[in-house]
Figure 1 (cartoon, rainbow, N blue to C red):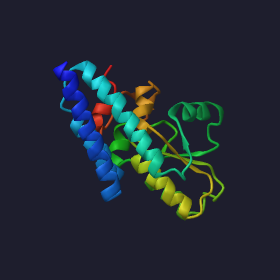
Figure 2 (spheres, rainbow, N blue to C red):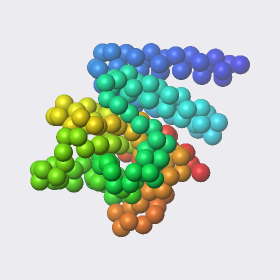
Figure 3 (cartoon, rainbow, N blue to C red):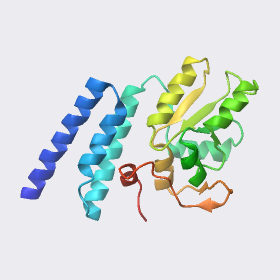
Figure 4 (cartoon, helix red, strand yellow):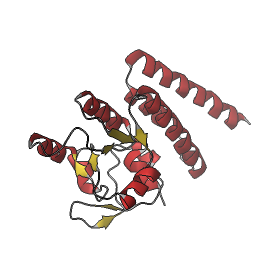
Length: 196
């Protein structure tokens, strides 16, 4: 009973800190980080699973709220699109080069490659573009900026790469070999990945 009360109070404190961070700094990053840091103190598998579920819920809700004007797709929708419409849209990974090198979705190009193609005028404003990152923070911001520059058909993948991995969909490394490795960005983000 005491542990339940402690967890409830702690959860409320983290939620309060999250909303404080969102409304005072307007930076979703700090809100997500606060959630992960606060919940990261638990080390039993049951608590970690609960933390993962709660963290995903808060992260997705806050991203959807902050980037409400940007269309989004889920990883399941992206996976179906890739099976049905391979090559009919551009999939952009906006994580760092190091993250991309460890693993990425097979059909994805890194954002640097996108800018190279863009400079060569190979990408029209009507082209369907889907963007992902680790969890959706960077991809939603990138999608918003692309839309501001005139790209009309831009979406981001909510849950992004970590959710893709949690669903068990395949990824490749820089040598184009299948892999299960993930660059977790940092130790707090790694809590969002299932360890199976």
